[in-house]
Length: 203
Image (cartoon, rainbow, N blue to C red; front, side):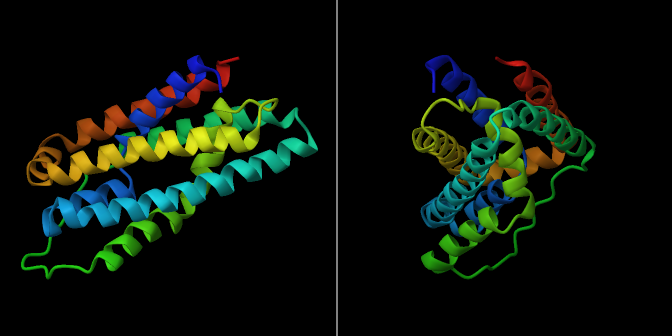
């Protein structure tokens, strides 16, 4: 992956991490209930799950490209349209509601890890999202394994940092989301729409 493409991919990953998702909300909730140290296990479980989903998505795309390299153009167009659709859905979504049960018992680290892993791997929209997102940055002439390593490591690193910040700031973030939740959804929805429109045009 060219360094210019990687910087663009990094910026897109950062924007996407801000978009409400199961793992971000889980980090927010667990940060409030169990504290940052225990929430690290939740975040690591999600990181492993995202790595698996990215691998499945990217190597599935690679198998399609092996049949016809011309498919990449159509994958980019279809993926861009799907990202625009997701942006519209997020834009129109109601403010995020996060409920934290009072008096929650300390959770076992393995249980927290499993929750993070399952949140990343059992969301049926996860693979579909990455199938739409990853082709925008894929170079069909380069090593698929090397691109997987770069893409997965970059996305997972950004997601870990974001979720750690969210977990640490969980007590203050929840009231803030209640106040500006609709505006937040519109901003993050706009990120999706922008990615969906602009990235398929990149050469």
